[in-house]
Amino acid sequence: MLVLRPPAFVAGGFFVAVFVLLSFCTPPDSEGDIEMDHVLIFDTTLRDGEQSPGISLDVAEKLEIADQLARLGVDVIEAGFPIASEGDFESVEAIAKAVSGPVICALSRTGFKDVDRAWEAVRHASKARIHVFIATSKIHMEKKLKMTPEQVKAEASAAVARAKSYTADVEFSPEDGYRSDPDFMCEVCQIAVDNGATTLNIPDTVGFAVPGDYGKLIQYVIDHVRGDYVVSTHCHDDLGLAVANSLAGVENGARQVECAMNGLGERAGNAALEEVVMAIKTRSDYFAGLDVNVRSEELARTSRLVSRLTGYHVQFNKAVVGRNAFAHESGIHQHGVLSDRQTYEIIDANSVGQEAAQIVLGKHSGRHAFADTLEKMGLHVQGDALNAAFVRFKELADRKVEIGEADLEAIVAEELGTAIVHRFAIAELEVHGGTASKPTARVVLTSPDGKVEATGNGDGMIDAAVAAISEATGVHGKLSDFRVASVTGGADALGSVVVQLETDDGTKVTGRGVATDVVEASARAYLNAVNKVVRMHERGDTREAVVGP
Ligand code: KIV
Ligand code: ZN
Image 1 (cartoon, protein in one colour):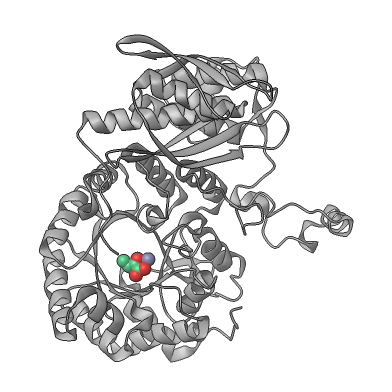
Image 2 (cartoon, helix red, strand yellow):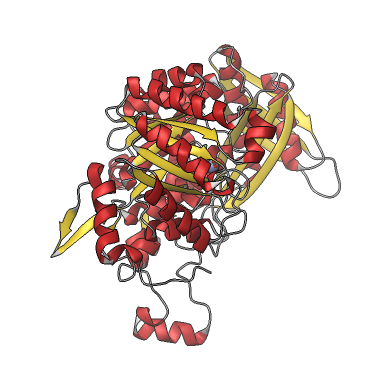
C-alpha cells in the first residue's frame, strides 16, 4: 500500500519550482481561492490497452471509443502505433480527423520511417502529438536493441528532432526507465528536451516499481533534467501497484498520468484511469491544489463501452466501475447506508455514472422515444443504423419487459458495428439440441447476393450454429476465444458474447453479439466476426503482428 506522507508539492520552494517548470502548457484554473494545477490524463486504452492479449479492435470500434474518451474529457488520446499495421495507421488517421477536444497522439520508435508514419497518421488532428520511445535500461539496450548507450543517445536525439520538425508537441519515453541507470536515463531525457521534447514520460515498463522509489525517480528527473517539460508517469500493474506508483509520481511533481480504462494494457495492464481520476478527486484534501479535467460521470459508461468492445469483462468488485462497487451486502452496512450513505461510501455513485439503472424504455415505446433516449445517452445514431437498432429494440422488448441503459448501449453497439461491416445478416436461426440427439442447426442468411441457407451439427447447440454459419458463408476458422457475460442482472438479461476468430491465413478478428438467448448471441457474435473477415479479405488486409514495444 502507498505510504502517504504530507504532500511535498504544497511545500514552499519545491512547489513553486515545479509549478513554473511544468505548468506552461496547462495554465492553472482558479477554483474559489485556490490555484488549481491540472494533472493531465493521457489515455492509452487504444494503444497500450489494445496490446492486451486477445484484443483486436477495428477502425470503427476505435473511433467509437475515442469519441467516448473525448466526451469523458481526457486530455490526450494515444490513438495507436501507426507503423505497426495498416489497421493501426488507419485508426489513428481516422481518430485524428474526426475526434476533437483532446490531443491525439501517435507512438513511434526512433527510426525515421516510424516517426514519419506517425506524423502522416496524426497530422490531421487539431492538436497532434508524436510520442517517441527508446529503451535506456542495460538489459533492453544489450539484449533487445543491441545498441550501445552512445547509439541510444544518438537515436533519441535524431528522432525527437525529426518529430519536432513536424509538431511542437513531442513526448519522449526512455522505455524501461525505472530499471535504467537514473543518470544515464536523465542524460537521454536531457538530450530529448534539448531537441524539443515537451513531455518526459518515465515508464515502469515491467511493473517492477514500488511507490516510494518511483516517486523518488520522478523527483530525480525534475532535479536533473533542465528545461520546460511536463513529467509523466506510465506504470504497469505486474505487482498490482500501477495506480499507487502513478499517484506517488504525481505527489512528486508528475503532471501527466498515462493510464487506460479498466486498467487494460500489456500483461497485467496499465494504471486504471478511473482509479487514478477518482483518487485525485476523492482525496482532494490530500492532493490539495491538484485537479483533473475528466467528467467523472462518464466513467461507468466509458468502462462499459470499452469492456463490450474489447471483450474484457470488468470484475464485479473492480474499484469505481465494478458492478459491486456501490452494492452493500451485509445487514449492518445496509442499515448504515440507509441512514447516511457516507457511513460506508466514499464516492457518490452518481458522480461516476453508476446510479441505479433506470428503466428507460419498454415494449410500447415508439421510434421517436427510442431515438430521443439514445440522443440523451450521447449515442448519435442515424439513418440505417437507427432503423436497424430500432428493429432490434422491438424484438428485444417483446422478450424483455424492462430495457435499461446498458441494454440499449449493447444493442446499439452491435447494430453500429454491423452497419459498418455488414455483409451477411441472420434472417432465420433454428437450433435443436438436448441430451438425446446430436445438436443440429439451420440458418438462413441474407447477403447482397441473395439468401443462403445451410445446416450444421456439432458438440453443442452453439457449435452447431457456428458450423451452419461457416457452411453458409464459406468462411472457416478456429475460435481462439469465446466469452459470455450478462449485460444486466435477472433471468431475462441480455447475454453478451465475444468471440475471436482466426482464419487459416492468419486473419484475426473479434466478433460480438447480444441477445436474450445465449445461442443466438453466440451466432450473432460469430457472424459479426465472419463479416469482418470478409471485409478484410475484400480489402486485401490481414492483421499484421504488432512490432514492439
Ligand atoms: O510500457 C512502456 O514502456 C510503454 C512505452 C512505449 C511508453 O508502453
Ligand atoms: Zn506500457
